[in-house]
Image (cartoon, rainbow, N blue to C red):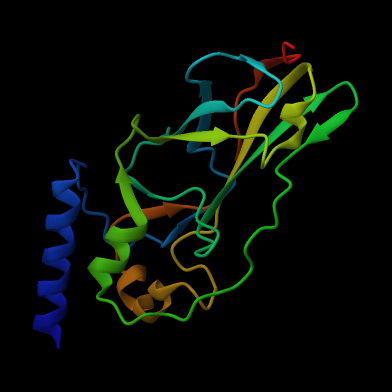
Length: 207
């Protein structure tokens, strides 16, 4: 049993090294960083133009930065409602109020699948070295954000939430490997951060 666990951890280290992250040996690390520690920053940029025609879409680049001094885990899929590991919510604020997505969020929890620890961790999380980031492009469309149909000037911002590796959820397959998670030499950031703000202009559709 002990030999099998050692082999499992060697495989995990190999996978993480493949991702290009610097590994450190922290013997008694916790599975989660306190949300009181400001170690993560969320940054957003409009990848094309901040001026769109009513009914159009906005392509937003999102970057989650590790501003601490140690490697940390960040969940890979900001939009995956079925895991609950993390979430990314956008808000457009104008003279008449603030507006978010108007689609129903998925609340169903899928049964835990039997997976190897390394497979589960690699599929859902990525190790970020200090002063590096993990990013993606998110498209905000009028189907999800109806306010994009209304001309005007708005302020766009985002809220990023992370529940950590040991999220108490039926869909979190890492709970089946709690002992392995607690003995990882790296932490997962947990908490809520808010991004910078971007001015967005929606022009009337030409007729």
